[in-house]
Length: 120
Image 1 (cartoon, rainbow, N blue to C red):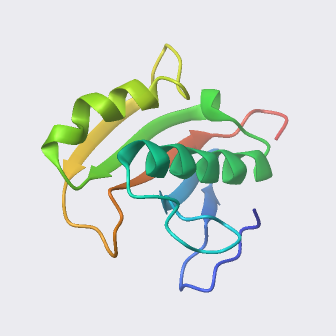
Image 2 (image 1 turned 45 degrees about the vertical axis):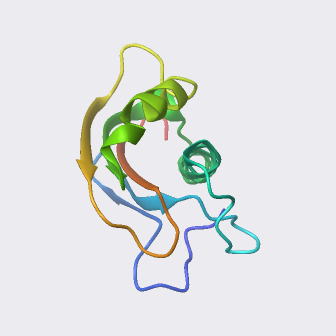
Image 3 (image 1 turned 90 degrees about the vertical axis):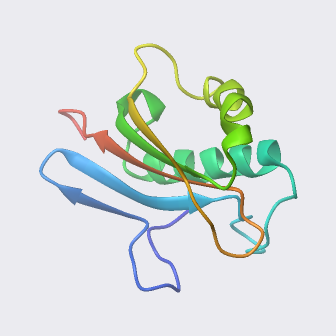
């Protein structure tokens, strides 16, 4: 995944040693379509999209220090956590979870802040 999008924002930006990854959703990066109707399908794709952006910055999930999660339903919280721990390990990054409406048929959106490694 490149840092280019047809929308008026960057997929990531750097400020000092911080890398800010814009909100990612469960869209297939090739087709641009929502990957499926379930929280699991969309969350896994969202995390893959974040992983691709982090990789482009020379980073991975262990470099993430802050996560913001946007869910469309409160009842998704426990299932989301089960999926989340497939990608993040202890010590977990700081996290905020917000319940809100999202565009189209999206169920989850996630943005992260990561810290550059000294050699990055």
